[in-house]
Length: 257
Image 1 (cartoon, rainbow, N blue to C red):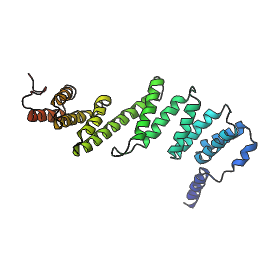
Image 2 (tube, one colour):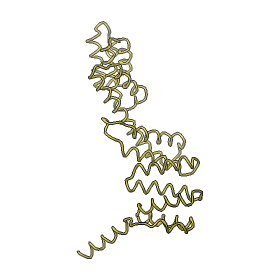
Image 3 (cartoon, rainbow, N blue to C red):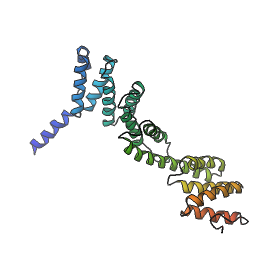
Image 4 (tube, rainbow, N blue to C red):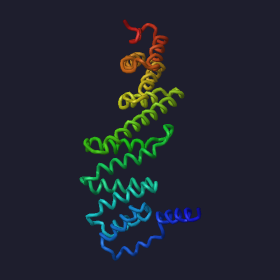
């Protein structure tokens, strides 16, 4: 048992960063430094790896190995869960090497890292929007990328999340009778996220807001879209019932013969 614990402790130490003396690299050539950085990566010693590759970039900023060093640095920070530093490394790579073959991978990682920090819908969705922007760029610029399949899964989830956030904020404005502000949020969902699960509720709440504002023509127009696209949802039923109660002279699209 003691030997087993000792062995595990040795393995743990092997993967941990010691006080790395960066001065020793000043007299080494680029290939030697890069090799040491790669050895640190291969041994899962990511703290040493990011420090070595960071020093490599300072000492040899024009080396042909710089692009790979930046990729390794971004990956190392990601493994260490230092997401801000990882994003910075990948962003620098994309900006300084826009035609490099690994740009699709960097864009994918940027989208993934931001997505993994996505907060609950009650909070600001800046990182979610960034994730969507990076992955959309990947899809637009590299439609044949091997990372696109995984990116599309994240894109779908990110879009759902952003739509949910817009509806959540709209509900708040609606509860405060600030219908104009609610309409702005709901129209964002209607215009840009109508393929998400939150769209039916958004259309229904648009009907509610327009009715509350006395804008029955607009309410009927939105309801027509709701009944056409989402007729089997509870939100379509709610909207029809509301219009029939509040505007009895108008036959709702759902009950029209």
